[in-house]
Length: 178
Image (cartoon, rainbow, N blue to C red):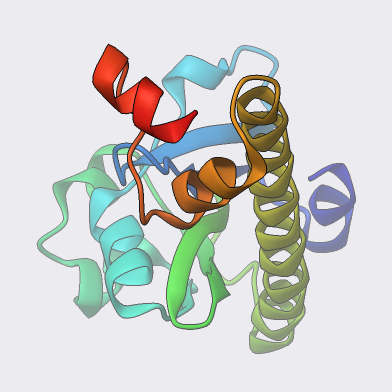
């Protein structure tokens, strides 16, 4: 995020990722030039966020408060959004999150070239997120398999891991496995 801050010079930037359990977008990283800004008070336009996450498209607006796409968005006016850019973090048609930058002082701060750069950064970040998630899931499966192998025969562990057998704690089930 700090490098992105230097490249496009926004007033603020944040990254939100989709929570795997709830499906909701959660703030993960926030940076602001304002010394008084706090992570819990980040201003997010739900309209812009929804457009990016639902449609999987990047949004660039020279002046969001005057942009006809967002004229009905109270949050854009309330948060005094001027220049804004929001790009999806996507892998295989799935939106994993967003990167958003904004300038609340002046309009026209971000150009099409900035959006192209940000889209490239977002594609690489999404790949890294997906790889980290896959690695984490493999580690969980290895841990689960190792725990099961301590108590059960290999054939039972395979059946449990591939989903053809459920692990129940009843004595009858345990006796049939062992």
